Length: 354
Image (cartoon, rainbow, N blue to C red; front, side, top):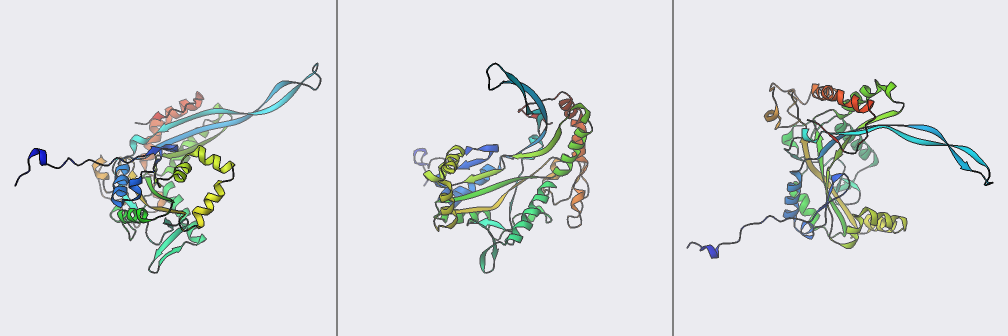
């Protein structure tokens, strides 16, 4: 029997979860449905992963100058000269490289033997006997590896290939289910977005060397660093306290009134307090013009003008990751960077990279 038009089921509608942006473009959601339905949480993360993170290069230089001012003395008929130090900005500008970040995302998860937040307020490892707290040395080694990996533009699954990016014994959907089944009042699920493919440390050093070569044009000490924006998605419970902690001004008020330490103790030690899940995320390659190892990304050939044989990921040292792409970009932008330095350019609006 066929259904009449009036008897047909209503069209399927995607659920739009409540969310808002916080500092640096990160996303926070307190939607109650995301805290009770693992499938809804998983779909929300997939939706958020379709928005790549942003990449800015920030160049700034300041110096201190001693200046004098006339002040009134104790006797109203007398004045005196007083020195003071003032910070002077030589230049301060940003370059937006976000258009070079490819939209394709590769989902990744941390392996069981690496420290990660897996439902408690401390980092843990997953073992055959269950979860155990990570030692201080394990955390230090992992943080050092994480810092080096991101500075060199290595993907989260390095040194393996992207086909093994999901290295946890649990899938992202299973982690979402575990989060939604938790009864904790101040729990949090965090999804991290990572940009890879360029040696960011090497490019920072190259830009800094370029600026320092023109030091006679300004007296200050320059700094150059990349800023990764819109890199985190947070899901938190739908209760008044959790929403309060997501508001930086209300959180600051709790800190200065000495209420926040009690909340921290509740999160840290109470069985119904807090818990964090930070085990997975998305990785986004940066556009390249030369062939790079297969481990960088499985979608790169579609964007390459010069396809060719790849290098084995198991034999490639980290110091070889700085290729001609970074220098090609710098050569193109060198006149603009020097012009901004010479003119003492200052603006909070980023220059757009092509």
